[in-house]
Image (cartoon, rainbow, N blue to C red; front, side, top):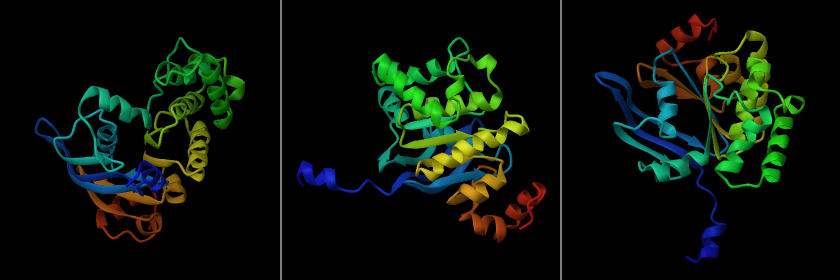
Length: 257
């Protein structure tokens, strides 16, 4: 097969594949045989009680945690273990954490510019143009010169999303991005995430925002004690869950199936 023919081949539909993934912390089993797939352009929401393994799976996805068993494939290639290769993989995955992780001594636009300039080697002009466009995208063009201390929690999280997008990732990982926010600022972050989903961004989202998962996700995965107990389209999970534990979890959140 020629190089030209290879270039014409469609990208693999399955972007992330988890095969019997296991993770231990001493005697504690954080993940026990997790198997699932994420397709290109999908929004997959991970739900379940706190401590059930959702965030651990996300951290394993971009090698912030190493696997103790099983296999994780990104675009059909097993996740590497050597630091140089891991850094290259992380450039293709944006991650947004619970806490915003912004540099306090840099303005909003400087935070967004850092990755393109220091990692991708873009010029200051190119980095600034990209950062300005992304701040417009997340609705913060008027806050470009503000330092994090002068931004609300929701605004800081939107800057963090813009910073992750500045690397032009193929996949976005969100680890409970609204859990540290005041109720009045949650919506502005979820609206940005919905816009990304509408644009076709592949997203894996750990969330307790059930309405967001019901409205935006293509696929919902329910975790319990480090295992997947149920997964499927939102209509199945929220309207007709199969497992009693899923019904019980949603019931505690005031969601009546």
